[in-house]
Amino acid sequence: MRFRFENNVLDGDLRELNCDGKLVPLQPQVFDLLLYLVTQRARVVSKDDLISQVWNDRIVSDSALNSRINAARKALGDDGASQRLIKTIPRKGFRFVGEVREEVAASPARTEARLAPPRMADRPAVAVLAFENKSGDPEQDYFGDGISEDILTALSKQRWFMVIARNSSFTYKGRAVHIRQIAEELGVRYIVEGSVRKTDNRVRITAQLNDAVSGGHLWAERYDRELVDVFAVQDEITNAIAAAIEPQIHAAENFRSRRKPPASLDAWDLLMRALSHYWRVTRQDHAAAKALLARAIAIDPDYGQALSVLAVNDMFGVHLGWTELAAVAPSAEAAALKAVRCDHEDAWAHAALGSVCFSTRRLPDALSEFEQALALNPNFSLAQGYYALALSYAGRSNDSFEAAQKAIRLSPRDPSLAIYHGIAAYARFTERHYGEAIALAREAIRHRGDLTGAYRVLAVSAGMTGDGTLAEMALGELRRTQPGISLHWIATQLPWANERDREHYLEGFRRAGLQ
Image (tube, rainbow, N blue to C red; front, side, top):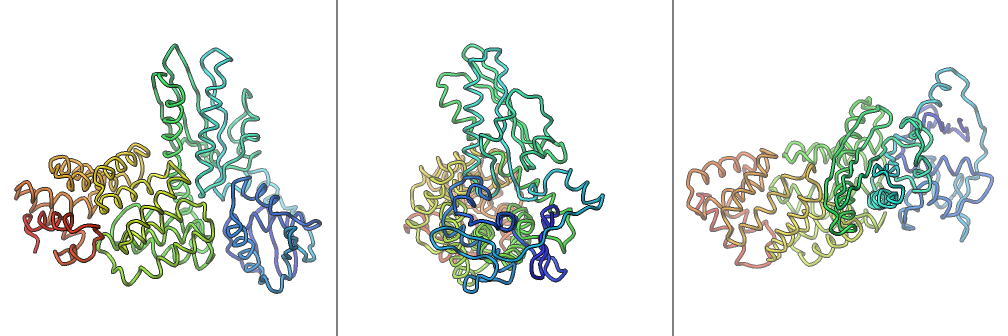
């Protein structure tokens, strides 16, 4: 169905908004909101209606909802003052008040398109099906349902994609329905399914993430556990599955965006491309990510996720010596604060603000923001890793090591896994466990050969153990990845809470041969 109003054409099948024949870029969530307002124009739409239909009953702050309303108005050349097309009804909600003409696309190509999986799949949406009980005992259904429900709840804490409610996804329980049909009916691209088999005091749980459009399996894993504590096992496996799924969806969405023509990229596509560069952790990819994020924010200035990643990317560049703190800290902090205002329950936004506080030497504030991020999403491995880093610079090295180990356990296939090993290595260095620090730094480098932080820890640990050959190699690689490294940079740019830790690090570099 197409809707014409003023000089605009809103195409629900193609998920496009055209103004005077030109495509208007829209974030998927903004498109969903606009389409819902237009189709429901005969009535006032309440905030609860929008949250139910656009956010799938997830908790949404007023600021996040209002930012999407403002983005929809801006796309139509409307604003909050004139309210020419989207009118706010005080204490009631919103109504689309433009004069609309509906058209049905009758061409064969359009008819075929409507039979394909809904274009809502362009906006990442996930359905978690009830896990199949393979125990042969119907009374064990509760365990598989519990696993499925917990995964659904954990995934709902992610703000990157929509998660279909249990009442919809569980309707397929016990039915032989093809996965593509489920995707069409629920309007999703990704489906999580699995099975549970309990025998005596052991349980085997399998889970897999499917791209329902391509028919491919993106990720699969099997978990075998003893049921000493049923709820502990359920929590452990739920967390492992939820933490593994997010990076797999990001990778799949990045691959999909790269198949699009450059001119058709929207803010989501640009964000996914930026994340793929961010996770590579090189100076060149850092710059590429920044440029892509700037383009995404130019399309949607209130895009909280892009603002969050921009702040995190800038601060990570500072920590690795790729950019000057003074040059990026003000804009990064403004971006992080705006992200929090857009959605104060977005864990990424709080992690972004925490990274700014960390780099600007406000360690108590940084720890508080990372803790808030983890309270909102306990399976957020990146926030867990940054929390570990902040703990180490705050002088809590033992807590830092435990936090880094938790990040590694949370997401063993995470793109940032090398960074977490590097943070664990630094925590061990601060406790004078140089052998363990060297082993962990080598593991980080095995995962990512250009990781500046890992070469730093390798150099200082080798320096403190008197291994001149290793220190020379590590220092050479460090100068390659961070050409401007010096004792002065270390002493002035890294945010230690106490002088003793700073001097220990500097002494390691002096013994390694850094001037």
